[in-house]
Image (cartoon, rainbow, N blue to C red; front, top):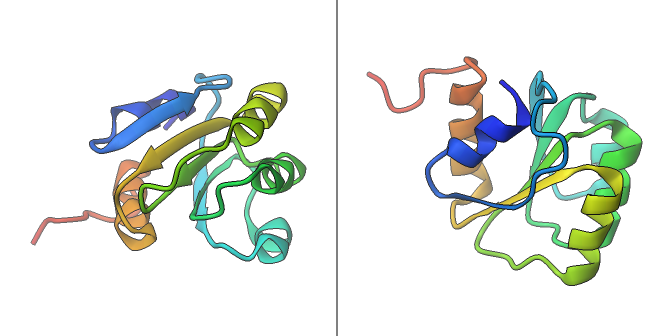
Length: 116
């Protein structure tokens, strides 16, 4: 999948695209930014509730290509500007981190979410 595919997922709202053609190989769900920095794989999407510019800084250091901010959290203007500056996509969703993680895992072909 590529970054712009996240915009097609139901319930995801795009705030900043970055380079939509970049490949996403994996995903990581977490809120403790030191854990994300040490464990999130490069070329991934981060699913989190941390809606502040430090999340963008960690994403940049870890090689994360997109952020999905869950639980209807708003994106502050300084976070949005940092993401634009770093070329990192930001999406929001009303879904919980679990729901968003399942949806992204299915899009990555990792699970068959919702299928018996």
